[in-house]
Length: 225
Ligand code: SF4
Ligand code: SF4
Image (cartoon, rainbow, N blue to C red; front, side, top):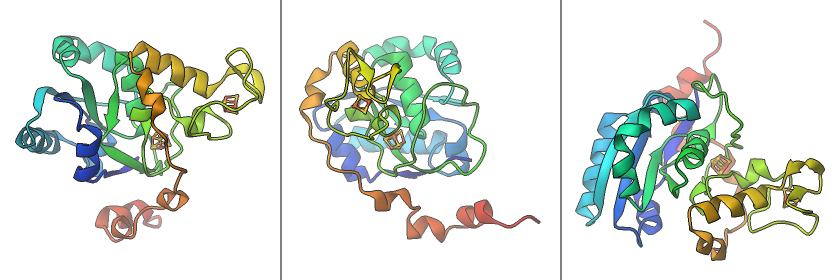
């Protein structure tokens, strides 16, 4: 199971400060097991956002957000509600946020941080990859993970080795930052590129002491019975 933790509410509100209309999308897979998702979490988030003066255009849970085909199949009835929103707040691991961004070409704010992929990962069958950094920044990178799409894990644009949109490490491989640029352009959000992303804090890759004290963590780490 993929373990995720909530981003602090204060951090989410800063991310959403310039946006009025939000759609909330939740994964019904690993997040339910990790207690970071499910209908109750989505409903209480809706209430919190509305108390902050936001308009929640819709709320939806899809069994597994790590599968783009499933998202495409399920999302159709709420497409108008999504189009009506300025962004989507996604409760899933980094793979789910990447899949959602790829399907909907809209800024997707990760509501969770991905801590570990210590087990089977839902129905994930796609090309998206997550490096379990513990501080998801996909809303600043068009839903493309810079830590997996770029071999150098660069956070603020392409290196000088990029050539015709291809990576200097492999001419067959798209440059991750070219993909980020194209994705943000499709979302009409190139202005996000002006934001400086601070250097990665590698201490966040470790599950937090609080998480390591939970029963869920103990179960995940349990020796063979
Ligand atoms: S930024 Fe990348 S590595 Fe970090 S949680 Fe998001 S998808 Fe995973
Ligand atoms: S060419 Fe692009 S993907 Fe390759 S290392 Fe440089 S920035 Fe990263």
